[in-house]
Amino acid sequence: MESKTNNLLDLIKSRKSVRNFIYKKIDNDTIREILDCGRWAPSGQNSQPWKVCIVSHPTVKRMIAEQSKYGGIIESAYLNFVVFLDIERGYDRVKDVLAMGAFIQNMLLCVHAKGLGAVWIGEILKNKEKINEIFKLSTEKYELMGVITAGLIDDALEKSKDGRERRAIDEFIDWF
Image (tube, rainbow, N blue to C red):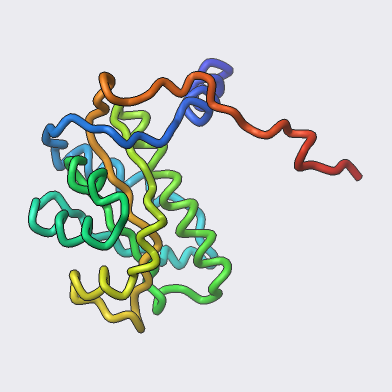
């Protein structure tokens, strides 16, 4: 059991945002497995308030890319998961948004476990209405939570982040 625990802890601590990809197809079984991991995220009252548009078509990727200063990353990744909060499935705004974060993190961890790379693009939220228009989704029913780009990591371009820094635990905790 300790080996599984250590593997999980290593997976969590070694996940990083990847922005450089080699354009190579990701098979549908892998895509479905990533989404399957996402759907096991906790959500208030088990509402599961997620909606995902899976984008690999170059024209649609370009349309999304035009809405972000990180458009080059969006276009270079084989795949983009455009993640929305399904407002009608939710019941409490804060809990629903927290569930969406857990959903996205589960997907990011699965991508990493599969040996692929991904980055969660939140900057695109400034143009969320335009993203809804691309997919013909009502802004009354769906709210963009972010875009996850995913693909095969281009190790030649990806900077090593072995020295990634995190705040010391004692900087953000209080004991009572």
